[in-house]
Image 1 (cartoon, chains in turn green, red):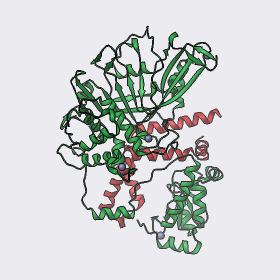
Image 2: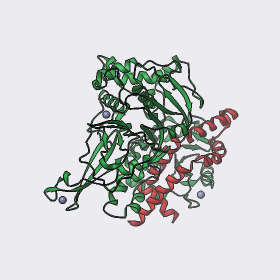
Image 3: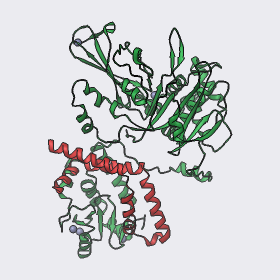
Length: 515
Length: 90
Ligand SMILES: [Zn+2]
Ligand SMILES: [Zn+2]
Ligand SMILES: [Zn+2]
Ligand SMILES: [Zn+2]
Ligand SMILES: [Zn+2]
Ligand SMILES: [Zn+2]
């Protein structure tokens, strides 16, 4: 094997140049225009045995097509003394004099250009190319010869956090964020750019980056997150002070500050409902569809709102108020009458079922219908228009009303693997109008594993609403679980996690779509 | 029949899209890294001068086929079915 071509290819190139390779590649390998693709479809078979084999080669001298496995290209090469042929599938050149594929920088550059063009034509948005270190990175690697190898039983990434006085609400969220796979990859790959040039110490993104460095440094002593606490106090004033705060509120506030400090390009990402391409929105933002159906004319008005997490009601549904928090959080429009739906949810799926059920808004909450031009009774249904990479669920265990504050400690089971397909707009939206929803759902979805999630972190609240404590379970190496109780980290089983009460549940999408 | 399907796949660009999907999935699930490591071992053992691409292909193909996850095969099959269904409708 040679990466520097061979004498035969070199002499071919000096006699005839790269023109024949360029044309062959453009038409029969990459197919860079629609016309080329058509030609390719019609002519790609062995000229001797007429088979459409997967390892077809084209003679670089005379554009004869011959199969490799049936040896017809070899016969041609030997009888005509045409010793160079191109593999139609990959565009690599085979030299029959050398008896192997030979690699040539100039030809590879041509191939790469054509592949980019063809990808665009075929609607392939961005192809994945393996990381190749730049000269700068090569230099860095040479100057820093120490390497860390991470094995399956490595504890790297696990670090306790000192409680700075009722700051377990912060610690449990930090643990969940530090073990969010995509967020970790982003920060450890140094992808973040600081927008606080004049004062980086005020930047939460930089602090996050620093925290990831601390967590994955290999140190085992607990980290003291005083800088993070200070930043949160500065940027989210409602969380300042030494009393216990709500972990969910802290989570949303953190995402909000991170999003603001990232300064993502608004409007660039068309598939993201928040229209922001910052790392927070790329990972956490989903789109919630709300369909309001007028009971008089059956007209549907649809809106889509971005969300960072989904808050789910517990307890009997006499006074339903499911809502989402996030960018432009919309309070739910009315109270559910829900007289016939008195079942208390006992699982996450129950909660999601209830969340996406059409609710009658009642006569006290009439909405102006565009069709009728008057105020009418209507039903409202929420469904998932776009799923986020990380789905965060907030079980509303704390009830605050003018009369009382209480905690609902009902056991709500939640699965390790979650399929969101039943709650998608494509499935649900139709069910209210027609019964064909079940047939349509599957044929429309392109891939089957699209909506599957896997649990990777759970935040728990122990105790009462007055005196409580937060802990977190986090997943490491795909299937190992650990309990993070401030500075203490202990091993746990997946059963411990699934048996726990659950306050915030974090699921990661199993298959990612590329933008 | 097989020829017609093949031509349709190429003409519409679907073949390239499927190939890209497969490539991506095989990278995601670690298949590519496994195969790369396997090839490295073979090259190290025999010496780079004494191995041809054909030798490598012959040695890794059985293992490579066996290691493709079922979920990936299922997803591709589903995509091809969907494509064929759309084609027959037109
Ligand atoms: Zn043949
Ligand atoms: Zn020839
Ligand atoms: Zn040669
Ligand atoms: Zn910064
Ligand atoms: Zn953003
Ligand atoms: Zn109406």
